Length: 383
Image 1: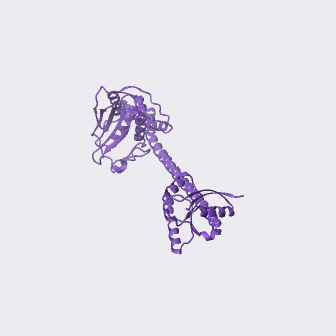
Image 2: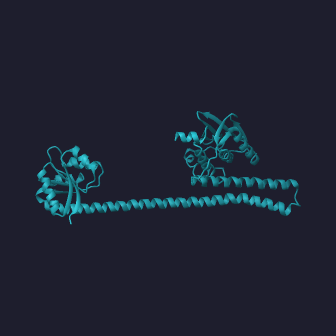
């Protein structure tokens, strides 16, 4: 049974083309072909469909085989090209092979055509299979690297979270155990201090769990934004009030118009502000100021948290919004799970806003984010 073959013939002589087709049929092929002998027609034929083999006459009145080779190779087509000629020197044949020809055949020796095509089709098939295997191998390697990264993140997650959960639990259990077993031996003031310590650590534990839950919802595309009118200054003051209960080490300053009201999720907005304030407090010296400011900008409000801390080098800023990334700086002991900032960005984006940081080493950091005034309705209208 004849083997189908899509062959593009670059030949100005119709008689020579017919001889080629006769030899192909004699060699057991059933050719589907097109004959061209001008550059424009060659380009059209190459774009029209794919070809199994191209056979090009080396010398034509208006178009040469070398020009055809250059055009074919410029399109990066993986198709063998066989050069044919009535008369060709060894030097010319070498030139053709260097230009990308797969083989060359004399027109008075067409008996070589069938075996040459069979060899080229086989080599092309093997090359394509090899490339597919290489591609599959690279994809597998990429998958393995991704799995390795996931496992690394999982290990980091387990290590960080287990440590960060254990610390407040240890304090809570220790404080409550002391109150229960030695309450009649210690002063009322000491009991109040122990209960206060337990309450403070319970708040920290609640924050860790809240961030874990928010990130899990975001990763699963299950964040549900409950919109309501939110007075930004009220949200900031409520969050700072809670921060002040937890830490007396910093002075919080508010620069915000009390008339700014947006449509947003109140709980999530306070979560964003709390995470940013907590982050600012961790990386700035006790006694320094932390400022929360707002600016109106068209249909959105910009909210920023500015500290007077150590600042962040440019090469580290890109990692800040990745899970489990904590800023490691000299003389600063990093704490927390490294989830606060990534949770902030996810919540901001869920509201249709954007978030970024501006910082220089030794000059503090300013984390800023925007929120649409009219809520998700205006955000979706723009999308």
